[in-house]
Length: 431
Ligand SMILES: Nc1ncnc2c1ncn2[C@@H]1O[C@H](COP(=O)(O)OP(=O)(O)O)[C@@H](O)[C@H]1O
Ligand SMILES: [Mg+2]
Image (cartoon, rainbow, N blue to C red; front, side):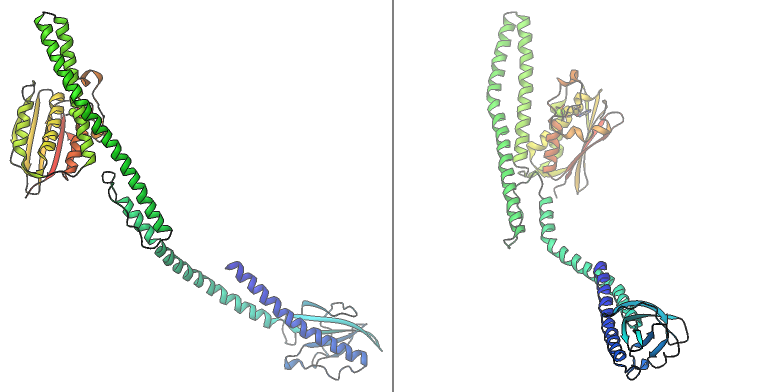
């Protein structure tokens, strides 16, 4: 708009000057014609009527005719004229007023008269042009910024409005969690680009859902299919072990025992995989009212007798809505880890405050470095060194804990027990 304004002012200035040029050229031509006909001085335009200032100068520089008032004041313009065609130019000359020089647009033409060659000047002051362009420039200087600001505001509002559906789509897409791919975006009614975008995104979601569904189904099927051969292997190995025992084959009995331990770990792994696949496929759980304290005490009983003292004295009543098998798994996984890492003592606590129920499992083992406290909840994360790995699982225990707890609308975190680790599970209480 600045460039356009400058061009506009320039254009207006040029056309006003062209108007002056026409007037002074006509004047100069008519005076020149009078001079040639010997009628000079008769029809000189009057300066006070706004007419052009006219001077006719002889070859020796004398003003021989002029508009009234200019006859005596001497030669105003020194531009050289040419014969035949009038020339126009902008020049400065002393005006009629007492003071300094002003700008004139002047036309000059030389003609030959009976007295010899004379030069005719006709001039108009350019103040009207200067004033007009100054006024126009001032108006533009104020108007252009106002218009630009107004346009910016309107554009901002219009673009914001036009992009609103995009933002709405974005918000919907952002709200779809990876765990619930059944959700879809609302497709706008209009069959425009946005409608097609929403439809395409929904299509993409369907494909992702189908593909993750297939993947989960595959894991679940694979885990399920693995269970029976492992169980059968386990049974056969037990028979083999007993036979070796009876035959007094100590070496064989030892191998069989090792293989039985391996099949146990395999079973645990397959069960964990199956549990995770089920949690992935259906995070919504079948809920029933559970006395969490009973469940915790059952699991404590199961974990007893592994060389670690388990103190369940701080277990008080806590009732939650949830899936008993899933929550038992949570307690068992936490207890297994604690017993495995404890130096000699594990403390289990449970308390409810009406709004939530909090389960803590603490041990006096090596603890977990702050940097690892988020990582250990990921699948297949094990921090144990290779030696103690054999005792643990495949690193799925805490991943299951987190998935189950989240499925119940709760949270799990790990902190310091000084020394040792303290896992805290918070679940919404059943009212
Ligand atoms: N009570 C604990 N004390 C120290 N480290 C722990 C404790 N519980 C879990 N961890 C660490 O977190 C890792 C992940 O635990 P988990 O998911 O149960 O896998 P796993 O028991 O199969 O190794 C473990 O390998 C272990 O290094
Ligand atoms: Mg574990």
